[in-house]
Length: 73
Image 1: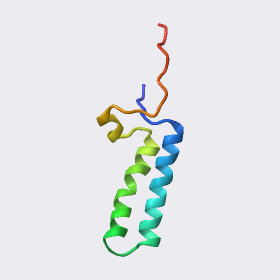
Image 2: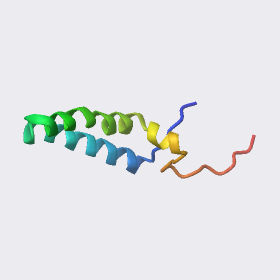
Image 3: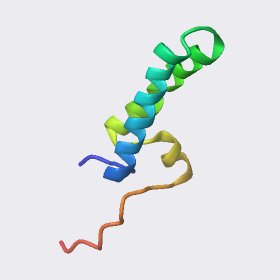
C-alpha cells in the first residue's frame, strides 16, 4: 500500500512549478546566487510532485487528497 498526500491537481502544480524553477535557473537566470538557488530548490517540488508525497505536508499533517470514506472489511 502506498501513501500519497497530494491530489492529482496538486501533483501537476508541483511538477509545473519545479520545471519552471529549473528552466528559470538554467536559462533565464543562469549566473549568480538566484540561478543556483532556482536549480537546487526546483528539484524539490518536481520530485514531490512525481512521487505524490510531500515531506512538508507530512510534517504538518496536511493532505490535498480527498479523504476516503470508511472502508468496509
